[in-house]
Length: 293
Image 1 (cartoon, rainbow, N blue to C red):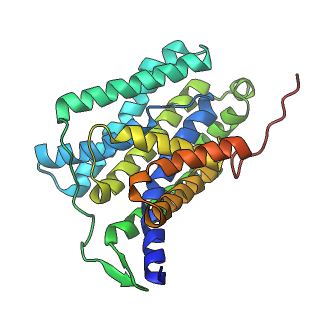
Image 2: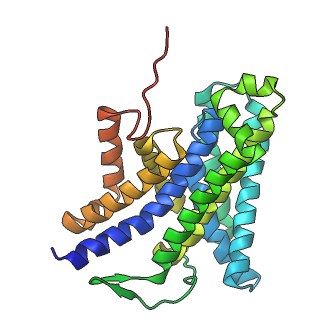
Image 3: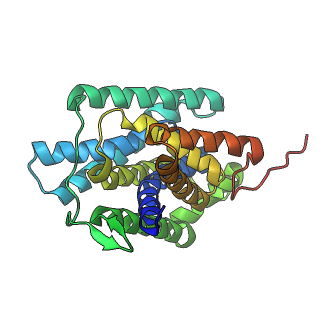
C-alpha cells in the first residue's frame, strides 16, 4: 500500500473520529456531573444534522443561520431533558436514570421520525467542494473544517473549565457534590448546564459531519454507541481522553475498512471496546480507582 492510500485512510479516520470524540465528550461531561451515562447523547448528534436540514428547507435560510438554529434547539432539548426527565427522579438508582435516558433517546428518535420523515438528508459543505491533493491523498475542504471546529470546541471547553466560574463550579461538583453544595454551588444548576453543554457539543458534531456522511432519524444509535466506546477507550470521566479515544477509533476503523473489509467497519469500535474492557477497564488515559470496603 502506497503512502497516498495510508494518508487517505488517516485523514478519513480523523474526520469521522472527530465526531466520535465530540460525542464521547458529551458522555463525559454529563457523567462527571451526575455519574450517569446518558444514552440519548447520540440523538443530540442526530438532531444537529436533521434540524439544520429542516431549517434550511422550511425557513429557506442560509446554511449558517440554519446551523445556529439547529444547535440552539438541540441545546434547549438538553436543558428540557434535564428538567423534565432527570431532575424529577433526582436521587434515584443510577441504573433507573440510565434506563430513563434510553427512553428519552427512543422518544426523541420517534418524534424526529414522525415530523421529519425517514428519508436520508445531506447538508451542503461549508466552503468549497474541490478536493485538495496532499502527498497523493485527496482532502475535501469539509474534512479540514471538521478538524478545525473540533479543535476549537476542545480549546473552548478547556478555557471554560479552567478559567470561568461556572466551569470551576462544574469541576467541583464532579469531584464531590456535597462539598460543592456546602460552599454555595447550586448542584442542580451545574447538572442542567452539563446537559446543555453536552447537547451543544453533540449537535456541533452532527452539523459538521452531515455534509460528509449524510443523516437520518436513526443515525444517533450508532454514533452514540461509538461515542460511548470512545469514552471508555479514553477513560470514563476524562474529557480529553474521550476526544482522543474518538480519534483513535475513527483511525482504526478507517484502516480496518481499508485493510480488511468495509463490511466490518462498524464492528471495529465494539471490538476495541471489548478489548479495552478486558485489558484496561479504566481506559488508556483513565486511572484505576481503589475503593475501600
